Length: 270
Image (cartoon, rainbow, N blue to C red; front, side, top):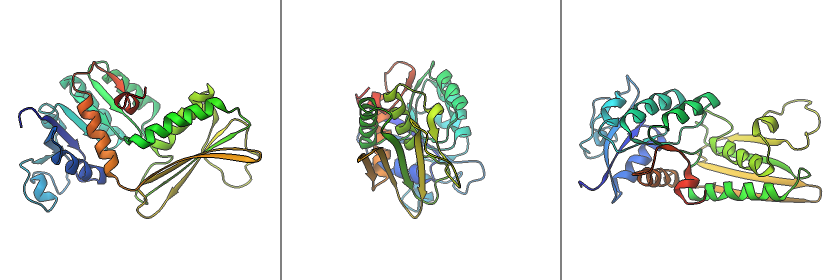
């Protein structure tokens, strides 16, 4: 047990929190040493296993992230932007690996994470799965090979409870396409079409979001020109792929120099 990496899960009651707990508990290389929830949550003070309706795990849920971060060698964080930024200040002080799957981060949020990454390892990705990261690399390569006669559209679908759009993965794919074309995504992003919008602008990268049911995650990158289309697609059917990727990132970050990394680094695709 002593040679296992101690990992804390932030936001333990959420979909990803529960999946992360199961993944860590089943792991040979990691042990769960802490779990947090927001102040006032019903789980606060309970044993995590009991809160999940299972056998006790010997880990109490707390609303004080500092108490778990100081004990952890890695923190996995799929919460909300404000919470993630607060956690990053603490992980930077503790020199603790911080794996971030939180989406909806603004440019200023990312700048704050860059500052924290001068002191500790941050691994941040809009999607932790191997397949999506391969899709991201392919998107960049295809965009580099094709000129602006090929319109780029990114279509993503998620469950009805997702609160942000486009998804972090869709934006990651958009950034990859823009990088392939040598342009800035913010200059060409088209995220809203309603009513009489006029013709599509040449060179734009369009986004469409679908929300419904229990869709785990589906992403299509469409390159459409006169007479032909190229479609790159990834379909996730099990949220466990994200948890496994996040755990892989937490273990990979041990011993790495402080910095702001992504899953391309973790998977050796950078």
